[in-house]
Length: 101
Image (cartoon, rainbow, N blue to C red):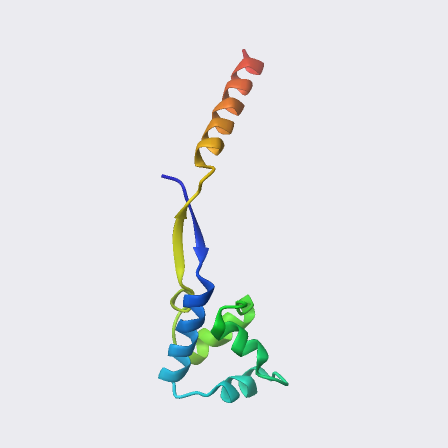
């Protein structure tokens, strides 16, 4: 079965809160580490409104002493267009066979 993984932003945000608290860090501590003038980006991460950029994920993973994969919460969701993709591939293969014949 063909599935497309998606990042659950809310659960990832909850995970960031949990990991931050586990390390005994405040939002202000993270703000200072990242050099942000305001804590808004961190709050957006924690609420699942936005995700940290890849470079910020690397910093978070370093701070939390974990891998990036341990920060992100990924759900595997079946692609509703799987049948269409399969049909398109099959049609493309048939078209190539006709051309080469």
